[in-house]
Length: 143
Image (cartoon, rainbow, N blue to C red):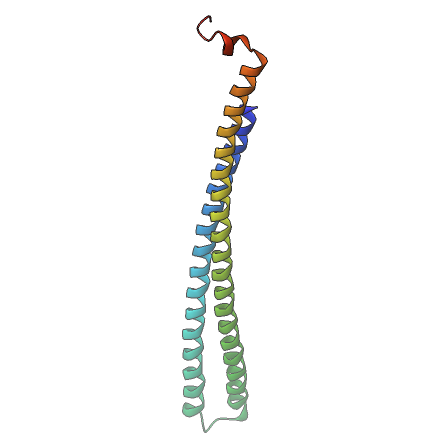
């Protein structure tokens, strides 16, 4: 019975450690997504400057360049929205990291409670063993 409780305690400990590793991985993933969002914003700014430079430099050319500019501005807007979505995703991952951290703490508390329960079960087993062999209580030194 103690072996079963020990096994359960080890399982809970390993599960807590795995949750901690997962929390670290999700945290790193959030940082990566946040970095990607910053890169997308910088790229959006550069594309906006490029679109404006193309219009300023090619005023005398045909309408084709005007269409290119419009397309670039649309793409810039889409990329700006995508960068915002990436930032939102980063915040959601951050919130999820916090939730996993809380869950990890709960698992630690549960693991601690299981350890206490294991100790209590061992004491109970010792006491039950005494009652099943009353001679050990009546004559403790005759073993």
